[in-house]
Length: 361
Image (cartoon, rainbow, N blue to C red):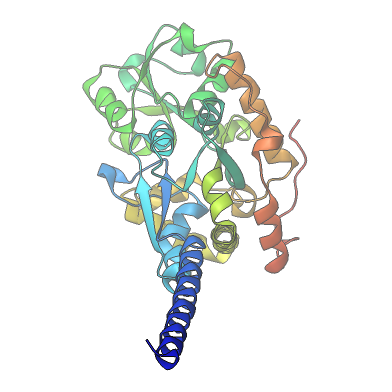
C-alpha cells in the first residue's frame, strides 16, 4: 500500500475519531440536560373531592391546582404535572411516598410526622395551612349536648389524619381520652354512611360535617372557632429528599409558584372567587364560606416556616410520641428546610407580606 493511501486512511480514521468525540460530547450534554429536569412531577394531595373527584378546596394549594399555575410554569419545559388525590388521606399519601410514586405531598401534621418517624425521607419546605377548624357532630337522637357527653359513646374518627390529633386535644380539654369513647376508624364516606344508618352516635371532622347537618342527620356540638381554633390542625408541603437533591432548581421553581399562589389566596379581594374555585370539588360554596367566616386568609394560609409553625409541629410531634402513634421522636428542626422558601421570598419581594408569628402560649 502506498504512503499516499496510508495518509488518506490515517486522516479518515482521525476524522472519524474526532466525530465520535463530538457525538459523545453532544450525547453527554443531552443526557445532562435530561438529568436536570424530570419528565413528570407527581404531587400528592391528602384529600379528594366529593365522590373521589380530582379537585379539592380549603387551602391555597387547592387554589394553585384549580388555577393550573404549575402546569403553566412547566409547560415550556415539556414537564408534565400530575396531581394525585387520595380518598385515603394522609395514610394513603404516606403509602404512595413509600412506593416512590410522589415527588411532593400536601398533608396534615399527624400523617407527615408518622411518615417521617417511619423512615420516609422528606423535607418540609412550606407551611400549607394553620389553625384548621375542627368540628364534632352528634345525631339528634343521641342526646349528646357537649363534648363531655361523648364518654362511652360510639364515634367515627378518621385515624392517622390530622383530625385524630385535634380530636385528642379537644377530648383532653374536656377530661376525656380516646379510650373513654368507642371510636371507630372511618374515612369520610364511611363516617357519613355510619351516621345515616345510626351505627354511630357522633363524628369528628372538618367542614365535611356540614352536609350531614344540613340533612338533619347530626348537629354540631363543638365548633373550634368558639375556642379560638387553639385545637386546630396544621398542614405542610413536603418534597422527597431524593427529588430535591436531583432537581434543586425544579424544586425551587415549584416552591416559587406555590408562594405566588399563596399570596393570591391571601388577598381579601380573591376570597369569593376562591370559594367558587373550591366548589368544583363538589363541596358547596356556602360550606366554604361558613367554614372560613371571620378568618383572615393571610394568617391561616401563611406559607412561612416561622416560629409559630415550627413550634406547633414540635408540639404535635411530642403529642404523637406520647400517644404512641410513633415510636421515635422527629427532629423537626432538621426536617424543616426553608432554603427554597427564603430564596423565593427575596426574589418575589415578599419578605414582609406575611407577618412572622411567635409561638402560641
